[in-house]
Length: 355
Ligand SMILES: [Zn+2]
Ligand SMILES: [Zn+2]
Image 1 (cartoon, rainbow, N blue to C red):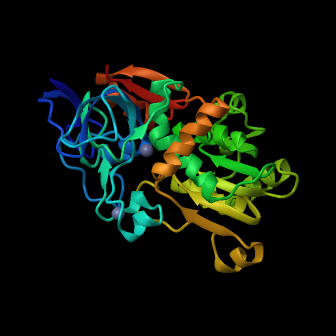
Image 2: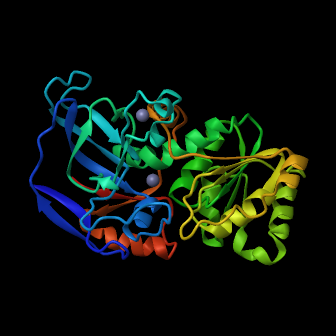
Image 3: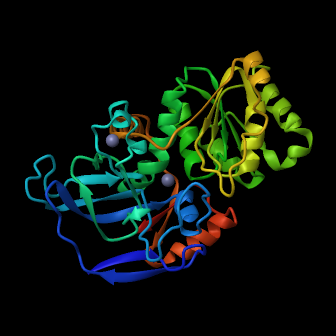
């Protein structure tokens, strides 16, 4: 039987482990025995229905979009993988690979694509079907549990840095630096030769500096929106030798964090929107055309990365020794994990042990 974690009552953090039959792979598919799944903040959002831009999550949804497992059965006609291969399942469960978006590399926005853990069964289960041409081969030299968290968190932050065209020596500010995305963002930014200023709550200072950040700022010590984020911007300017950030990676899903992000940018700075804001849509605070023209700013967003981004993300992790900091927890602990997320108690990632 397949033990799977389902969202019992979407809108709340209730989950339960159920048993269901193991399915057979269709042509072009493989059956995976998943060993690990990372828990992303977006899973929490999908379980609790906080995204105004998405339809409500169905009852009984199997969540999860950061899986690593072994190929145990090939669907008819599948030749690109063999039994025993270790592969990863990403945020995009599938993409058509031939539409305009896909041809430009935008597989995660393919109109015919499916999302792991939302409307399509995700990686919070022991057995999972996946298209053979869309899973990501995982190098055996990587820790498989840590690699699970790279399947969303790692790919997303690496793709953000790649598309922001970071160069050696530039200052990168990571918002939500101690979280699942943020702690990987620090490591990828350092591996790509940039200097990092990490922003998070004070308790995460040691953790962030230990990952290679040059400086840490406890944003709670600065006035919030009352001063338009001016004091915080001044502190970041000071830490970056007066220049301000070349790139700001907004890894946190809080609208408050976005409200202060634009102010941290220096000349020709780029804000990359990564964390999906929870609650209703709000404009990105501090962004106005006049100021954007004056500083020649750029703002863009991305939804994780494509197959090529995934491969590069894993290659860099292997070459640079990037390590997911995670806590391994049992399959029946998802509700508790969501609780800990709500309380901001998690450093790095939680990875569920599905073995
Ligand atoms: Zn994710
Ligand atoms: Zn497509």
